[in-house]
Image (tube, rainbow over all chains, first blue to last red; front, side, top):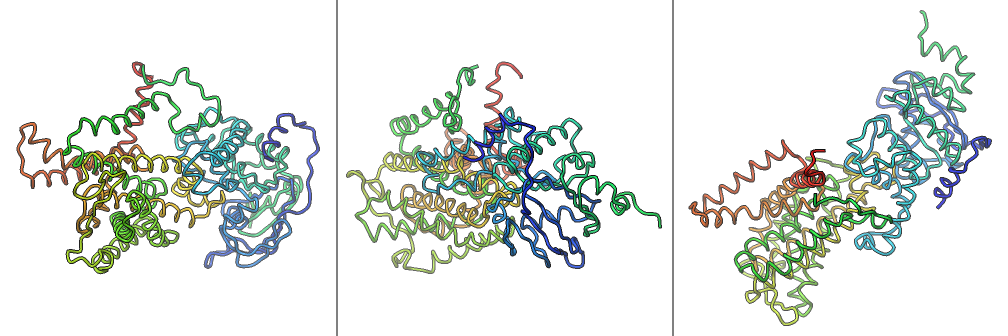
Length: 276
Length: 359
C-alpha cells in the first residue's frame, strides 16, 4: 500500500525537505475548444511539471474550467495535442483519465449527497478494488479482506484531513467548507499523480482557506502529487503556486512564476481593464 | 433508554462495517426471524399465511429488486411486472423440461433469465435518463407481455394459455401444486427471501453498491472516480431483474399456484411495485419490506379486517377503497416524506436513542 506508507511517512515528515520538481508531466500544444460558435479555448499551450503546483487564473469566463475539463476528458478539443506522461492522448473518457492517475474536485461541490463521508472516500478507492459480484454478494473472505484493506486507507485520509468526527454523517448535511474537504479526500483516495482542483477555496472564510492551503501544500510536499489549481484568491495563488498560467477570453496571456505574472502588464490590464 | 449503543465499542473495521453494528438491532432482527420462521407457521392459520404472509414476502422480493434499480442506482423502471413474468415462465419451462431437478433450484435459476432480459432492456440507460428511460422500460413491459400471449411455446401450447404448476417435492413434502400446504410454501418462500435479502444487503454495502449510489447521486463525478457508467448501470439492471424474476417465479409457484400470466405480470403490477418502493423508501432494504407489507396487506385488511370488526363493506367497495388509500398515501408521502416509511423508522430510532431526553 503505497499511500499508507506515504501517509505514515507524512507523520514523520521533515517540512524542510527540498521539493523536487521533475520533468514535464502534462503538455498541451495549441489546444482549441469551441462550442458551436463560442470559442472557449483558443490555441493555448502550456505544460505542468511533475511535483509542482501550477495555477490557472483569469477573469470569469476565461476558459479555466473548460481547460480542466479538457485535461480530464470531459471535453474533447477540436485542435491541439495533449501529452500526458510522455504519451499522446486521443479523445478519452473521464474514467480512462482517472485510471491514468488524474483526479479532480469541482467548482460546485460534486459529492455523492446521499452517502456518508466515509462512503464517499471509499468510492474513491473503487478503481483499486478488484473483487467481482460473486464475492461482493457474499461479503466474506476476499471481498471483506479487500474492504478492510481499503477502509484502512480511507481512515488515514480521514485522519489527515481532520474529518474523523463526520465519518458517518451523510455529506448532504455538512457545511460547505467541510464538503470541500471531503471532496479533496475523495480525490486523494484515488492516489492521483495529477490532482486538478477547481476553486478549492471558493466561498470559504480565512480560517478554512488556511486549512485548505495547508492540506494542498502537504499533499504536494509529502506525496509528491502534482497539482493544477484554479483559484480566484490572488493571495493564495501567489503563495502556493510555483508557476501560473493566465487565461483571458480563452487565450493565454501570460505564463511564469508568481513574481513574473504579477508584473505582467497584460495581466494587470485583463484584471483591471484598460482605458480606451 | 433501552435502545442505545453505550458501552459497545467496535475495535476492528470488520465490526464497524457490520450491517447491524448495534447489539439491540441484532437482537431485534433475531426476534423477527424467530417469529417469522417458528411463530407464524406454528400459530398462524392457513388463511393468514396464504393471503397475508406469502403475498408480503413475494412483494418484498420484487420491491427489493426494483429498489436496487430505482432507489440505489436512480434508474426508473416500469417493466418490473414483465421481468417477473420472464422469471415465472423461465421457471415453468425449466421445471417441465427437467422435472427431477428440485424446484427451488429452478426458482433461483429463473432469475438469470430475467437478468439477461433486463440487461438487454437496460442498454438504453446509458443514453436516456429519467422519464425517457421509464418509457423505454415501458416498451419492455408491452413487448414481453405480447410475448407471454403470442408465443405458445412459453406456456407449452396449452389451450388456456396459463402456467400450470405441477406437484414438486422437497424431501418428500409437496412444496408446489395443489397438495402443498400454506405452511410449507411459506417456509420455502421465507428461506428464499431471507437468503436473497442477505445477498442484496451484502452487495449494497460493498463496492458495487457504492458505485450504484455514486452513479445515482452524481454520475459525472462517479466517472471521474473511475466508475464506468454502462457496466455499473447494467449490473444494476441485471441484479434488479434477477430479484424480479425470482419474485415472479415465487409468485406463480408458491403463491398463485398457476394462472394466466397476462393478468398477473401486467403494467398494473409494475406500478404496484413502484408504489411499494416509493412508499417504503427509495434506497432502503428495510423500507422495501415496509412498503411491501403496507400495500400488499391493505386489500386483505379492507376485505376481511373491516368486516371482522363489524364494519360491513362489499368486496367491490373494499377494492376501490384500497386504490383510494394507496393513491392518497403516495401523494402524501411524496410531499411530506419523500424518503418513505424507512426514513420515519430511522427518525424513530434516532429519537429512541435519546429517549427520555429531548436532545
